[in-house]
Length: 155
Image (cartoon, rainbow, N blue to C red; front, side, top):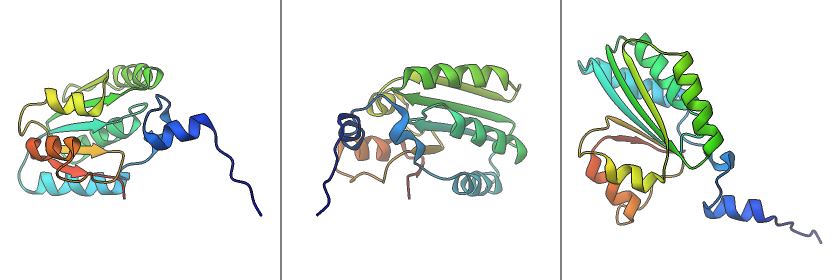
């Protein structure tokens, strides 16, 4: 018989209540993001606005912005939100180091649902979600549907 070990940190991460980056390593992979950006560019778009919910240290959004520049986007906007304070500070620092005239990236400490509520309808072209796609009738699912952007979720 094996004993299952529980930790408070593990329970909080599973419940989504942790401010640590444990749950933030998931989400759409770089290849899926690159395909979505290429598809968007192939439809004739020259600008893109990305929203990364639970961006952790910002690396996913920074890589997506780099890929967008490689694909020829001339105007790239990105907004990353996370509850992980140290991660957001790191993301801001990395964005400052990687400044580019065509790119405008912002990182802030916020709940994903609050960030979605402050977005204008149709403002985000690509939305990165670090969890499976929520039910459409949930508050998060309703907010994502209102925005109308392409959602890339975990999985």
